[in-house]
Image (tube, one colour):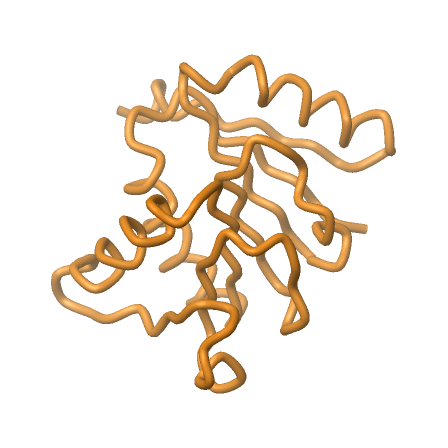
Length: 139
């Protein structure tokens, strides 16, 4: 069953997503990031080209011809046919394919707390193991 982590009180969702992508790639080998729209997909794409400053996170879009050879997929497409290790959700709704993944990371900004509570309730009612991490306490 998918284990789900909520990262709450996040000031910069894309920065946290970038850090989680790097960590998940190193630990699990494949990562999918679901973004809410094309503008967020583009912004995260740019960020992953620049961060970390001393490395490179190989990534592409779901429909890329290189997707089968690339370990990190970022896209707003509500479908997923590839490897299912770690899913990072930046969307306001539970991803329709989340249960295929070993792990799901929900990144919650202060402004997105109401929608996150609905996602938390959705997962809890279905019996998923949920953990929360208050990022404001981590400095």
